[in-house]
Length: 114
Image (cartoon, rainbow, N blue to C red; front, top):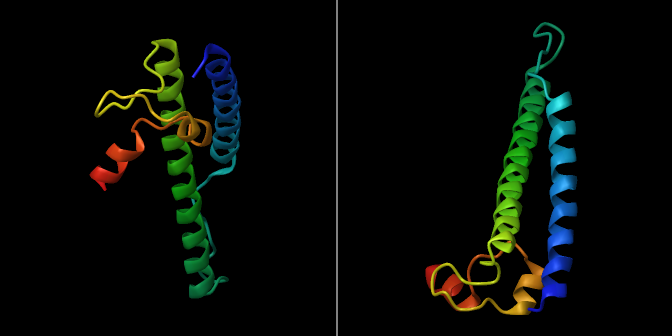
């Protein structure tokens, strides 16, 4: 990849990071424990509310994990390690990086580890 391609990916990653942080901040601002009136709400409603809360928490966990991956990619760009497989050290195919700029492994290493 040339420098302009890497700079474009860096800007895309910075935008993605900002979006993810904004979503997480909004989630944290409205996320509160479920407080249902046990006498007025049926068992199924409580189960539905708890399930919805668990799904929201899992979405938040995945968003935080994605933020870590984005930060890792930005760090690799900063240290000139971006685009190299951490297993074999070979360059990751440019098409893969364009689709998934947080990728840390080339296709052959990804396939052999699965």
